[in-house]
Length: 259
Image (cartoon, rainbow, N blue to C red; front, side):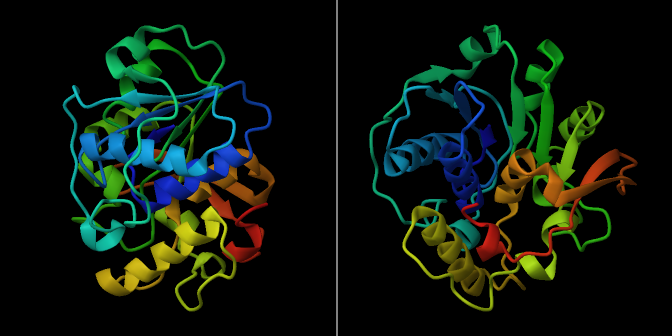
């Protein structure tokens, strides 16, 4: 998982680690995007500590030595970049440098990219994943960052390079549908998943966003439940041919949140 730790990355990480059946382990690559890479690393440690439980097969990958783009979207993700929900904590899992991690033999693996794809390209050039799912891009939906979807905008060249590999794209079009909008009413419950969703909702009133969609978690939902989606070939404004997932289940986000 490549995560630029904002709130939706946190929700996605919690989702996949809570439902990790079929995986022997998970490497979480903390990258720049919603926050600087050093903040992403700190947020990864805080989140994994909050998730707790059995994390013996999880590692955190430190990318702070790598050059990569980022913004610091405090109006969307809070002053610490992850909703200001957690206190600082040491990493409960091993931390490995990106350059060392990249050299490893990864065996069979899936790639889930939830931020700019600057550091994803090198992995795809080295080895072929079984599945490559990314959150990024837009086709018909109104863009949210300088004429593009945020992850696409921060590194358009990397986005184009990665889109040439077999993939499924969870775009703004996938996520921005009425069933997945949680802005109107807070979710009930006190699980970590609900807390993250509700904090995402609260932040939309601070940022002025129209609607609240937990974007990155929908990439996890596709990886875990591909039958909830139909895939269509689409072309974006840069000419990238994308295999775009369309959400067809018609259940609301609260209904699928912890399934």
